[in-house]
Each structure stands twice: as C-alpha cells, then as structure tokens.
Image (cartoon, rainbow, N blue to C red; front, top):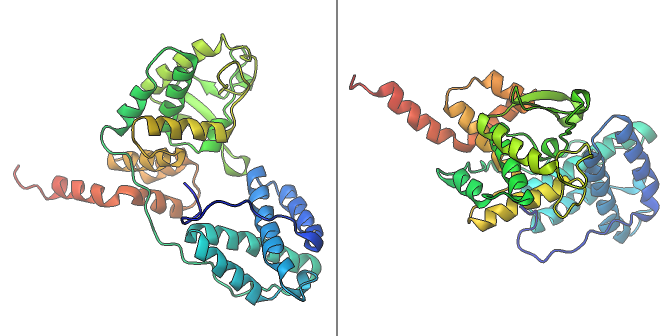
Length: 318
C-alpha cells in the first residue's frame, strides 16, 4: 500500500527552519497527552513537511503568524495532485490539530478554521476469497524457525483481526504469567491497542497449535530470553511492526495474493458478521468504541452478506 499515485518516490523535506520551535513544542504536547509514538511522529512530520516544502518557499512567511488559509488550501491541492485522497486527508487532519493547539497556546488566529478535510471516497477493503488463507498457510509449510514463525503470525492475524502494532507488541515469558500476554491453554492473548488500552482476544485451536509449534522452535533461539514474542531469523532480535509487515507481503507474493496486515482485520470482521456474530461482541474484540468503525469494517463484504441473507429469509421451499 502506498500513498503515491504513480510517481517516483522522493524523500520528504523536513527541515522546517524558523518554524521548528513550535513544532517541537507541539511534539511535547502530544507526548504529554499520551499519544502513541507513531501518532506523535506522523503528526509532527506532517507539520514539518508543510513548513519545509511550502512555507519556506513562500515570500513573507517568517513565522506561524504569517500563515494564511490559502497556504493550507494550496498545500492540500498539491497533495491531492500527487497522493491519494485518504493520504491528503490524513495530512490535513495533522495540520488541523497543530493549528488548534497553536491557536490556544499562542493566541494566533487559526488559518484552518472553517476548512474541511478532502473527501475520501468509500473504498471497502476486499476480504479474502475462498482458498486464499489456505494458500497462505501452505506457503509457510515446514519445520524451520522462519516457516513456523510466519505460519503463527498469519494464524494469529486470521483468528483475531488484531492490528499490526498490537501483534508486534505481544510479550511472552514461559515461566512468568505476569510478564506474558499469552495464555495458550485458554487460547487468549492480551493486546495493547490505541491509547494504551488493553483487551483480551481469543484465538482458534488451529491458531493455538501454530503458536505452540512456533514456541517450541523459539525456545532454541539465541534470544529466546527476550520478552517480545516475535524474533528474527538467524538469531536476530525482536521483530518490529515493519518486519512483520514484510513477512505478510512476502508470503502473499509467494502465492499470488495481495496481502497486508489490515486486510486480516477486515476479513475477520466480515467473517464474524457473516456467521451471525453480534455487532457488540465484534466491537469488543476489535477494541472499537465508535459504531462508525463497525460500519466501516463491516462494509468490506456487506453486499455478499445481504445476498446470503436473502436466500435464508426469502426461501419458501420449506
């Protein structure tokens, strides 16, 4: 998945110059509010990019008090010409949070007051077709450390639909339940979601078996003492979320399937609803507090569910 529309990738300009002091203060503000490290980085880099690539090139922009709404509108128009609407909208909302904070902090007029984020077309993420998940599982068949680790990663994603960051953050300690997020016997995993909120999710028996096979080979890993569950090959240390993402996309390429971690989340939500699971339980399992997320994720295969419901409800042959 990429934000670029079809242009060669170029590194972002992040040298904000005279605008940096306020950006650094904004970063401190976000951290003090308990925002996730990734959120802090995303928001601050969006503001740095705006300052470096636009404001520093505009005459008469010596400080944030010189920024006009036309600057933001021009920047968003530039983003929409080169990136997806969703990406431009995310950048817009990051700038919006910055200017709200700046207006309250330094009593500077908010140049974004009244501006609306770019419209993002509703494009449901496709769920997996019949046979896709078995093909992914077969791509990891084997007894090597890498094969069993990758099989366990895919199995946990498929069984839970948890976020990439949540899966990457799972801890494991064989002899200390207080330091372990896993309870294989009861098929439960505790994950830390957005805002540091914890919740417990269930896994299937098949996923539990895949995890058990991985844990047996993990025990022989040179860095098995590490608290992080997922370890790298060649006795390397804990895997990052980026490394796990690469596992998923690489296994997908092996069997010709377009796979990324968030697709499992959409598929899990569709499968739950398709099999008659309640919406409230799905919100709990996915860590959602807003019904808006339920509608968004449930949209991935809503039409297919409706057609199957028609046959069940309208069938008059009995």
